[in-house]
Image (cartoon, rainbow, N blue to C red; front, side, top):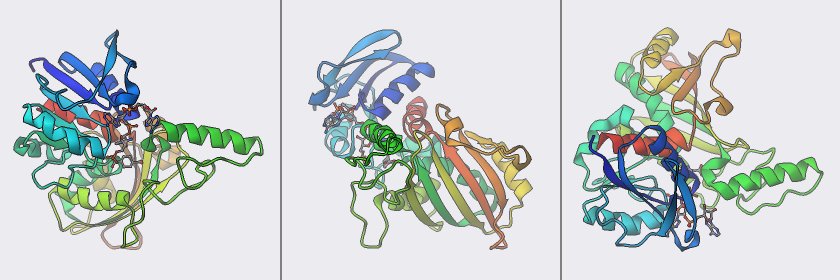
Amino acid sequence: MTPKSVAVAGATGLVGRHMLQVLEERNYPVKSIKLLASERSRGKQLPFRGETLPVEVLTENSFRGIEVALFSAGGGTSKKFAPCAAHDHCVVVDNSSAWRMDPKVPLVVPEVNAKDIKWNNGIIANPNCSTIQLVVVLKPLHDAAKIERVVVSTYQAVSGAGAKALDELLAQTKAVLEGKQPECNVFPHPIAFNCIPQIPQSDAFGENGYTSEEMKMINETKKIMGDDSIRVCATTVRVPVHTGHSESVNLETEKKLSVAQAHEILSKAPGVVVLDDPAKQLYPLATEAAGKGETFVGRIREDLSHPRGLALWIVSDNLLKGAALNAVQIAELL
Ligand code: 25A
Ligand code: L14
């Protein structure tokens, strides 16, 4: 691949910093790199390949001469600036939810639908973190036995809500251990020693009773898998974990899949690692998945309530495969 001129919009955020780290670790052929953020980050510097680079303020003219831009600066910023970048012949890989369901924008997980990159018009959307790790595991099972229905409950890490949320988890944990009242600023309820069934914490529930995170999992799964017939029910829950989203998944297939067949299919699936040895207490854990690029699956067993049902436990790093790594993998395919 010929080296590219790259920009990272939202470089100072948790995801933006991981994008820089992943570009570096995977040796992405960077000819030049521009770090962009809001006015708040003016004067900040970030490390890249042994150098310290200045952060610039993102403007409509930031993308002249840039070939690839990775965006993780929130939906509003992407709505406003991704079209400017595309207009300047830069290809945007956007981590926000702004463009994901736009029929003119491909929504891509390389292991699942790399071919969709071809029809991009300058913007490619990076899916929601919980959806990415789900479809990486569902796709090979769908190809083998056609998935008809999925019921998923998530156990989502606090890092998904950003750096301030992580600070709140630590401060509240300390307060509770000291017998003090935990203070809530980011989350509507204490997240320390608790589970909160509302993601994101700032959004109102929809009229149908679902959160936007739950609706993202439903809609994005169908778009990435290219199959509107898959029925999905999602419950998304924030848990006091630092990094690594976990998911309990029940699926119903048209053709019966045995546990052994599911094991065999998943052990050959790209990006997937099977960790499943109950006798040795081996199963995926958020603490083990954090910092790794793969999606881990275990606890694979028959769903005893359904003749063609399987139950699984899926874990991946929400900042890596769920965000920065998937975005860089898309950029590598360009
Ligand atoms: O709208 P969405 O799609 O739902 O996305 C909302 C947010 O979710 C995060 C990501 O936040 C995104 O902005 N996110 C998205 N996908 C995620 C995933 N898969 C995900 N999180 C986890 N997993 P983020 O914190 O990772 O990154 C935010 C970055 O965007 C920059 N930014 C914001 N507005 C911008 C902008 N850049 C350019 N133009 C704009 N208009 C932001 O830079 C950051 O890099 P910054 O300079 O605004 O903030 C730098 C640091 O300042 C602190 N800070 C942030 N907000 C405030 C603040 N300080 C004071 N007041 C604030 N309101 C933070 O410490 C930040 O790191
Ligand atoms: O749509 O854990 O990419 O708060 C990523 C972070 C949704 C919320 C997205 C979280 C967001 C999610």
